[in-house]
Length: 247
Length: 305
Image (tube, rainbow over all chains, first blue to last red; front, side, top):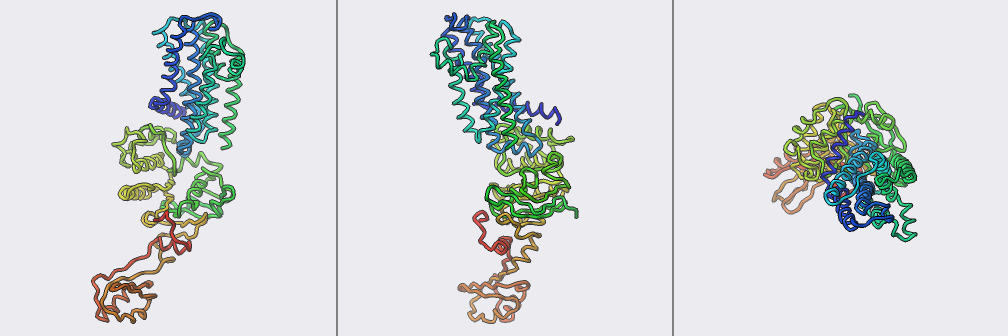
């Protein structure tokens, strides 16, 4: 396999992503708009409920995590399930473009889009609100990348298990919304009833939000969350390889 | 001529349904080989097994001397494929698709020449979703021809095309063969198979029921010829005794004579001898459709209509 072919595939997939209104809406616009509203509503709040930082900072960091969730759960699986359903993967495979290359470049493109979308989100937030930037950029970057890899693997698994783009979209959205609301990027965990918080704790997006927030607020590396996300990466990645290899 | 494809006793079942039932065939280098049959006869499964896209239950397949199951990647680089019911991403542009697919081929492939040859130059920057059915098919063939394949598989290439676009496609397929590429053509259109194929296998319920050139098939299985003319003369009883005449039918002034071989010349001279010189004397030759009726023993299904 010529590495230049893979770069070309990734570049074409990036261009295709920018031509897809639904994907753009969900990965760029939706987190941005919700962040602007909610970070504004709680701009003057703070204290222990918001992990000891101001409301704006709490939510800006949180929505960097939400971007990862919306790409991994909504846009990536719907995109690849449509490839499967419409015979695009077959078309690729018959022309010596292996499926692992399509999946792999798609995951990389999603990671790049997630980074771009997060940077845009922070830049727009800087125009509206006053908040502190991450105490440790490298630790936030680590949390972000581990989260993104875990969620891309989850997205690939959803795509592989879904027989159609509709199914992928329905499943993706019905996973995304509860995960988002209970992740800490909706109401802060401090105001949630115990049961809700416990449900949130087992959902993967909660760990993504924490993996970004904790190093951002200077609360140190969130070891448990990173381990959870690495396990997610291995489990979802392994299952995807198993299911795709069998089919 | 050397065989580029050899298939022996190929079998493939889906659950209890037998899709391909013990098929053997050989395709020679440089010919257009057709698989003709109604939808659901097993044609697509056959060519997908031959290309290594499906795993047969049993049987032996060799393409260019290679085993499609074991040497899949090496084989893919030497064959081209236009798949039924496949697609490209909606928003990919024509040039992007050609450029991308070409980059996965070995060696340099000039996709710009194919763009020109297949009449896609004006559509270079158009998205896949904006192309017409004919343009999409031309793009698929162009993609299949990237990297100069030795064998190209075309599965229901002209499905959904209007008659003018189909004729253009036929001309281009002949060009592909004339350039030295072996073509395997899957179709359910009788006229397409008759026009295009050098040799042709008629497929029915997973089996090959006849295999030869279209003309030989017609000669062998449908040698009936019908001579038609009009006359006011009522007493035509003598026509039945003309050699090679099998039956005479009459509908008002219109007379239909069914026969074989040289029946036209014999009927014509007998008519003249009896002082009948109809100005509308004509003959209906049998077609592949008659062959299909003869070899499958059933009416052509609606797919052939």
